[in-house]
Image 1 (cartoon, rainbow, N blue to C red):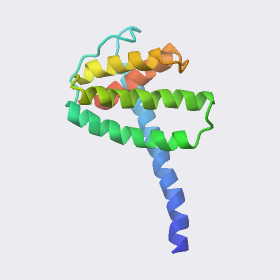
Image 2 (cartoon, rainbow, N blue to C red):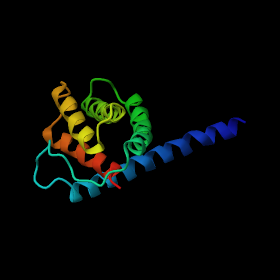
Image 3 (tube, helix red, strand yellow):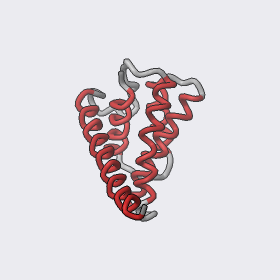
Length: 138
């Protein structure tokens, strides 16, 4: 029993690391295919998955963010940046629940996160936007 428990920890860590690596690659692909120019608040063209499917996908994406946040020291730049990403993804979910379209929720949630005092750069906001578009596009 003790051996099984000891083996689970490295396996879980390996899986979580793989998820982060894959999500980073998705973000890079999204940056290449997305917003022409640098208009942060431009609504992206679809096609996007349905709002229900987008909410389910965001649920999947949020889990590793929560785990990573738990391992960061509060107040650090990394913690602040990841908290902003977590809030952004959650705000998109809430807007989808309210009935907004996926493309509209992506932009409106970005305005919420950008207006909060996370102090994150325009470029990082654009990166998060492109990442979520890459995740939610069909």
